[in-house]
Amino acid sequence: MKTIAELLQEKLEKAFEQAGYDAKYAKVTVSNRPDLCQYQCNGALAAAKQYHKAPIQMAGEVVERLADSDSFQEISAQAPGFINMTVSDAFLSDYINAMAAEDKFGVSVPDKQETIVIDYGGANVAKPLHVGHLRSAIIGESIKRTARYMGHKVIGDAHLGDWGLQMGLIITELKHRKPDLVYFDESYEGDYPQEPPFTMADLDEIYPYANAYSKEHADYKEEAQTATAELQAGRRGYLALWQHIINVSVADLRRIYARLNVDFDLWKKESDAQPYIPDMIQQMKDGGYAHMDEGALVVDVKEETDTKEIPPCMLLKSNGATLYNTTDLATIVERRKLFDPTRIIYVVDKRQSLYFEQVFRCARKTKIIGSDVDLVFVGFGTMNGKDGKPFKTRDGGVLRLENLLEDVNSQVQNKMADRDMDQETMRDAAAKIGLAAIKYGDLSNQAAKDYVFDVERFTSFEGNTGPYILYTIVRIKSLLNKVAEQEISVDDTVPILPSDNKTETDVMLALSKWSETVETAYAEQAPHKICQFVYELSDAFNKFYHETKIVTNEDTAARESYIKLCRLVGRVLETAMDLLGLEAPDRM
Ligand code: ARG
Image 1: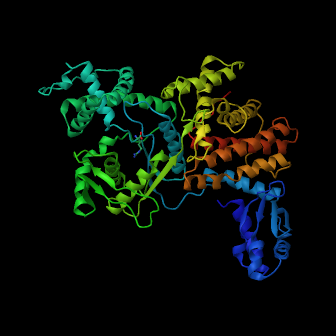
Image 2 (image 1 turned 180 degrees about the vertical axis):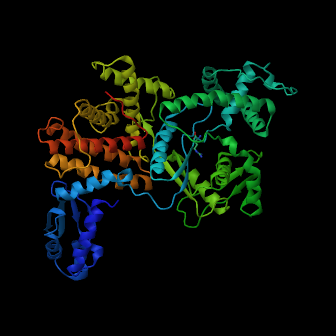
Image 3 (image 1 turned 120 degrees about the vertical axis):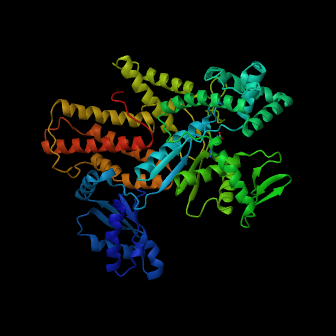
């Protein structure tokens, strides 16, 4: 569906031409002075050079040709040459009615369906989740939902880290603690036990311990490195332990991601790409792309136009071990083979941007991927605490996501202590509101920027927060419940009427930005644009709600029209929140 600005622009293009000017000057944008007008065109200012005329005169000539149009409530030329426009109430309500009748409220889905793999989450098996993983999950989930809403075939992959040193560390520590376990007996040829020799709580304790210990003890670290290499080389007992670690840890991760309302289509792991490595390396050698450099196998990826140093992409260390790079490249090979994607989007901490630049260049140069596949890096900033440093828990330790969720939920429950609700309803509401506080607090910032995690602000029921948006939805739900309970009739064959007051006009104007918002949020991987939209719409709606008698209005036609508008706002807000991975409770 065309935006209002586009529709107005079409009218202006004709008028510019009729007045003897090039239509290219008729560009219409949303006004940056909403106090003066809704839309504006600054083209006459730009056209002055070409036509050697005063811009205000040209603007006047254009406006004259549209003075009779019933699309405008007002169109005027303003010094030094702006064209200011406010659409008529009928034009606006026509637009809103058209939007309400369209699939997806008028979002234009592209003709060509893409197949998009989104690599997000990126948690490391058996290592505590950190805030970077939280951000990746939140942002990636929204990008995924938006792309899917746009009609694309989207595959979200958790791409778990399961092939690194953390595995060697855990194996080593287990060996020290329980050397008699059958997994360490190299002569053992039988089947290994089904039951893991540890619980999640054990793993939670073992990894941080082993990690800290290895930093102090070089020999221990070396042991862990050797164990990692042996695991990667396929030592049976270690593979069996590794499988146990994955089973225990992934079950835990699944639970946590589910609480975040984040769900992956694939739970692939770095190790899944390993079988693709030998052929890939062979191909890179045969193609003459990979060469030895101080014992390591590398591909040069620097380009003449580089302004900063881009180091080569290392594929094999001198001891033959593979690296993070190698896995990511092999994962591209794997994804091509399994899904033939047109685009792969990586949602990862922006501090990995140079790394992904190397990987992308290497993939292109060595032709493991063609120019028909887009590789997109969406780098996000750091979530900081109020002290401006990367977020830590109160005791300064690593983030336990579940504790964070509990913390936020209890803050929300405190705020709602005076509500007349049973325990169950309250718990459900607090979980949804708490999640909205966290996710919206994150998503409302441009992803690439750092932001401050401020629980008090994020959980506030007022201002640009998740709870405020949910509150607006709940308000609409309860209004519509009243309509249903009191059996107030609403004739759906009659369209929403032209607005009869400023607050209603503002609701319609905010609504009208929907299709453009979703289309840009998708094109730019920018969930914050959806947040901006829901906030503006909620704000406009609440003002309208406070100033308008809706359900009790004596004027039947007005009442029905208002109710229909409320219903539309509710549907659009809920859809938008779903794109952010959020859901409203029934009451709050
Ligand atoms: N596991 C990695 C980390 O914790 C993130 C993975 C990002 N995705 C990727 N394809 N490299 O830093």
